Image (cartoon, rainbow, N blue to C red; front, side, top):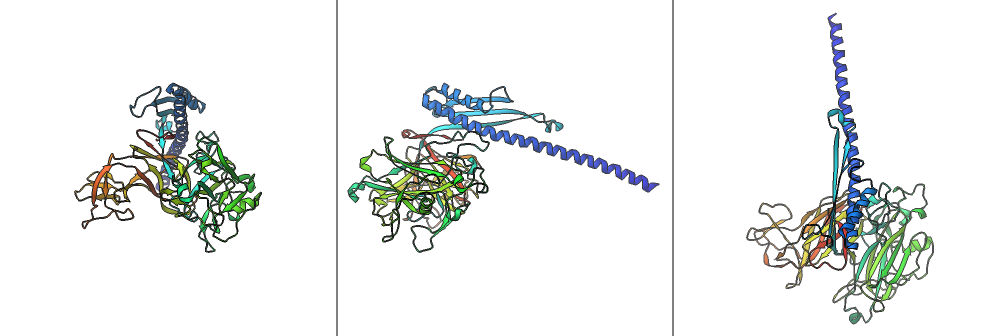
Length: 565
């Protein structure tokens, strides 16, 4: 009898424990569902804030009226379902203001902040007393001066080995790394950042070109202008030379072949997914100097590619697949891309835009003097004059791709001396990324060499990026930066010192140390501007967009509206 009663009591306790466990599991499941809903709404608010702030500031600048900008931003928010008092929206704040006065200005506002808040009922979490919560997001757009970005990424000769320029087709997914070429966001709504003109690149032609070379003609070359890989491989792969010619690879690929769904080519033909890309040279008056298009639907005849002296030139205009294959992994010069700069009005730009397709077109650009067909490119002769290199710069913005996983140091902007703050923005640096470091170099005209710009550090600073001088003062040699997640932006703002110390360096610009391991300071001077470099690790096939802008007196005529936070 005793054993029976004991078993009955144990059975009752088990039922109670199971009931408690079930209740806990239900509560956890409820919280997960409600928290997931909050995350989805937060992402939606994030996009709407971005779109409204960019559109509001663009309208303000275009019309000279902050009131018109507010109306535009409100319309963008309302179109997405964010109207005050509806759908749980409890806050819609639209704030144009002037960055210098930090106050509203009807005519001179150069910032636009949008804040949205939405209250959400908690259907499941209410069982533990949480009946509602709210999601709040803010975005700020700004008018900043554009900073030139060297598109060579330090590659002086040969083919890209680690990093190259890259753009996706308009039908590609927004969160694949190119937010300015794709027509729609991930949810299918129109992409407010889509740029119908593509990416703009500035041409720098040294003023002594004619005097040194006897000609004012220049030549623009494109590496891998098509959107195919050898064997139509889906992903890029390391480029390798197999025949002893370092000018062009024989193995590898730069292009990600994607379908409109973002997957592989299963169920699609290559022509449906391959991206059509247009390259266009424009002069200072907006006249088109030359235009070329490469892709499955049309091919511009090419007639010149870089090659070793004595090798056979390719002069035959091709059509269809043949022209695609003929430019794959080659430096080519489309017809009209060698031109006389005196016949046009400088300054010159190259616009690159994708006009069809869903794949990624990896490519590279460079400029040289007008050398004969068959003569190899040489950065010291055909690529420069005593007054500088024939260079191509991104107008404050470049889309880049890593063909291999690597830790890389890349130039990301030439900052003018008038810069008080520099804003570095990156989009979708989510593949294999690690910590980001930002460093800067300036030029010592008295010594004729570069030196690192050192940022003052507090007395308790420590780490590999901290150095100390003989007086015990500490400096940062680099600053940490922010990296972005999938389909997201991240911004880092650097405040430029009004005065910088000039340290002793070797011929390569590396810091020299005294016997106690301290840096040697030669003196100080006003900030003279310099070049910003980024150091971070990215994974193979990582595509991202990098933007560099600055704030300070005397902004250049060319400005850009960007998200700063």
